[in-house]
View 1 (spheres, rainbow, N blue to C red):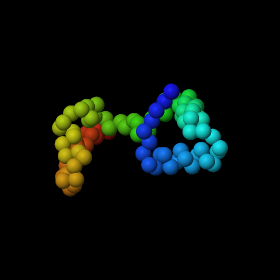
View 2 (tube, one colour; view 1 turned 135 degrees about the vertical axis):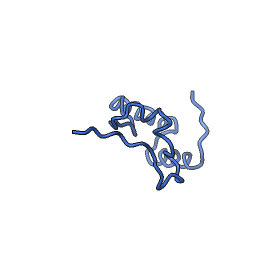
View 3 (cartoon, rainbow, N blue to C red; view 1 turned 45 degrees about the horizontal axis):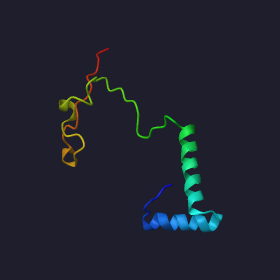
View 4 (cartoon, helix red, strand yellow; view 1 turned 30 degrees about the vertical axis):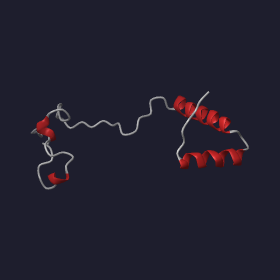
Length: 89
């Protein structure tokens, strides 16, 4: 058995689905859980916002020297982070 507190918007969605589909609230919840599980099974390793960036500076994300001013609006026009050194060649 599951009991859930729904906000007004979610409760309205549940009411609309039960009316439109002719299902009980329990069936709507069961089918929703199954759909979410199926989607996760198809994309088990899907991550949003993960990427790879090769700056040439191995400690760019952990060295405070490189992060000085990063993420602050007050840093506009200032040195935001150190640039990788270019190789002569």
